[in-house]
Length: 255
Image 1 (cartoon, rainbow, N blue to C red):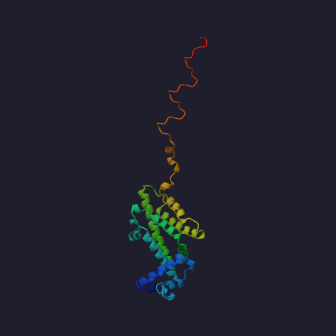
Image 2: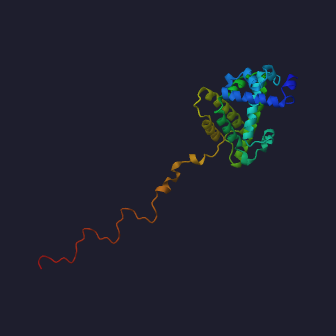
Image 3: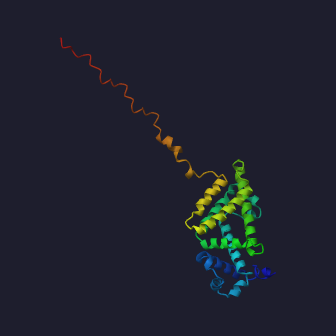
């Protein structure tokens, strides 16, 4: 009941949105470990108790910050509400959208380590089925896997090839890959998450290799082949007499 009374948009929607925006900005700019309820309340201009009036707890607030980030990512993609409710509505021409969408998210995440830290922190808390993080990660995971799985099915069908890995397994593995890469990146900030993720995604979905990565020697023969009308360099002209042939007009010394 507390959640219904304080944690919904029915009361103070504008204020709640302001709190989430400020919290998201603090996490992204200052980092997760520097984010406190005190900083959020000062940024909004209300007391700490006033902030929590709109949420069940600080953890609930942080989970809602993740939802706010997901909503922004969704706007940046070509997904529709219909796609989220029913992944089978993903059209063939947009089948690779979950792939490009995931790569775009990774690229943005590398610019906001604080949000990656927040995601990793709350994913640990999600192990408790009673936590607010548990519901968030369950819902998010189901949507991700449904979209990626359906995209894999559509890609395989459009290219008339049998799936190398079952689509549902592709979705689960990709989810694990992306989450794991974020942990690796937190440990090694020079890791190129986007590049590694792209290689794995293309391999697992058996996507065609981009033209830039094609075999560079493929065009070499045509570039080096001699022109059909050019004679071999060692062939002498037909009208040139051999250098050792003597002249028949030379008189003999007896005459």
